[in-house]
Image (cartoon, rainbow, N blue to C red; front, side, top):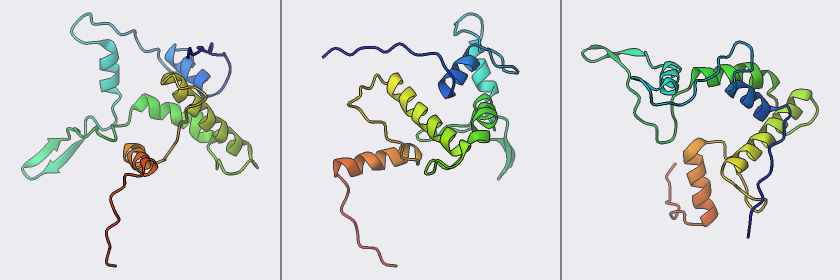
Length: 161
């Protein structure tokens, strides 16, 4: 069965805003340099390193101040400044309850969610037969959802309350 690749349409919304950010067309946002391996440091990696929130965090350890080195990227990574800035400017002002349609922000949030689902489907080459499920609890929540869907859960152990 051959899959047809849909041409991406130009428009407004989250995907359009992300493309504008990617190509440096939003005011106040610099375009990311292309990925190259020239010189001592890749400019994209440098930009990513400079935008990690908390990368310069110092805490008091048992022998004095120490720099935090985050190594647990299994389920969650560190927040990126340029992503958080984008969310604060273009998403949060329009954030509302997706379970209602009584306000413009609720309708916009529903559109953001639907568009995010479509972006994910496009990125993984999903077809109309595939489903993207938002489970709301990160990687761990997704794994639990998969285990539940496959019905391979461990037997519930009796708990004493």
